[in-house]
Length: 104
Ligand SMILES: [Zn+2]
Image (cartoon, helix red, strand yellow):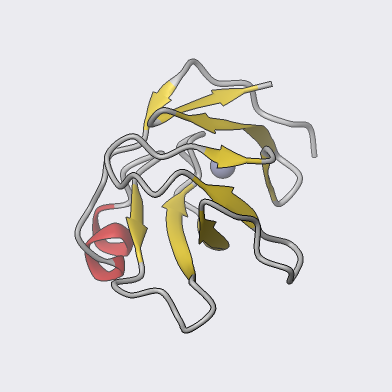
């Protein structure tokens, strides 16, 4: 399966996982309401390519959690930035920067 290239896609912030999975807006994101005691939480997202797949990433606010895979997050709901890049089940690979998904 080849990787899909997309134009930049806005990461629309939604208020919860339920809305995320019901609306399936490409590139939309939601965050678990509270970090755990280690300061880690989950960012849910819908694949930016339009396939409708949904997944969850372990993120740390300002740090990369020790468990892998995980991502450092800038703490913003509306303009999230994650590092490193996000690779979605072998068919979309790109970066989420300042609230925009860009394929690479
Ligand atoms: Zn996809």
